[in-house]
Image (cartoon, rainbow, N blue to C red; front, side, top):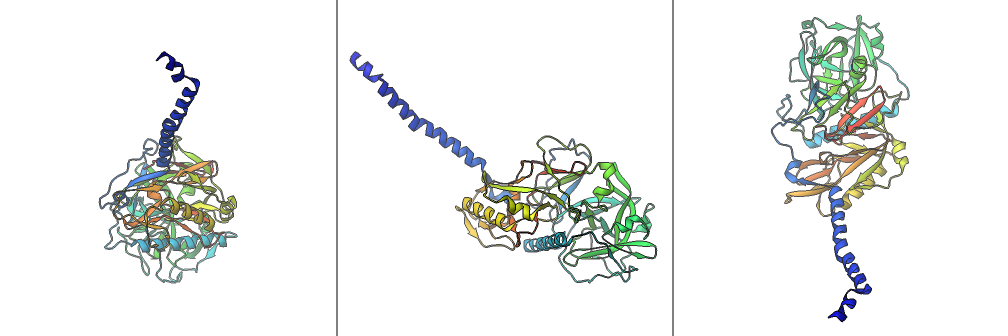
Length: 478
């Protein structure tokens, strides 16, 4: 036995033992690490959670301490909405309307070589715009409740970072108003209401204006022939009980046509001079934030001013375009799928440019960027059965029979190394379990502006700081 000990503990044997350890022990650790990496590059999702419920659930804001004075955001067609319709829009209608909005944005950006004022005719009766029915650029999106007048009347309005003029439907409707949930606003019942005179410098700030007697007329016409026309006026705007803006300038619409749902009008949060953000700049410092809820059956928030939270907020530069000051531009520089950065030339993004828009549903990408995203997503979803394309969405899957599915993570990287890791609710547009589609679409032209839409913004605390010219993102906002 003694003669065997040197052999047993020989150098060669110890070396063999170490090799066996490397062969069997270390690979198991590497496999564990690989598995963790795989899991971190995917969302594991209960299939049932992909569909909204019929009951409203309030989301708890992560940053309540900063945004105590905030408005609730709800989807106008969801169970949290105060607007009741006999029949909500179908998914196909919502997506078709979304394409109409995108077409309108692209036309507006491409044609705005200079800011021009369009004149209306000199009376409200003759200030006619073709009354063809069409798809409203804001149909199918999110609403907040605001108060107008003294005493205030509450109205449910669409909120939109891609529009400037705030407007509501007003009495008398000289020809027609579309049906809305709340009664029309009656200027005669507000002690603080006043029309803005045609000679006022505020009147000339409008992109389209005219006169009716001494009163200033406004007009907003959207790309699908939806429109609102009426008097440009001022009155008290109540956002929350402690946030009241006196002499707020808005459109008192007396001729309105379009599929705006049953909302009373629109809250304009664009960057031009007539928007709420610009009018209340001194009060709120050009700062506002919102969180779009993960489902149509939950709530988010819209808040103004105050100190924005610094924890986990990453800021990217806000770019300005003097030809189209309404829109908020930023630099999209890369896309990451399943933890892997896609091979996309930087010129693909710089040629198109990018805006962030609360009213566009589906994010639009330059053709080459979308093709790369689609291919990478399809490779990682190859284990699931494909479904037919749906409207503008061409990459769809059938999850029938699955309890859980694994969805690759998707992140958008912006200038300043800002990474927006999308919530799973912002990756798939789910019409039904048998048709869940990648919630992105490609533009038809490489020069068309990319649009960071509201579906991909879901659950982010999105902070706009016009004074610092930055836009911030932090996860888990609602």
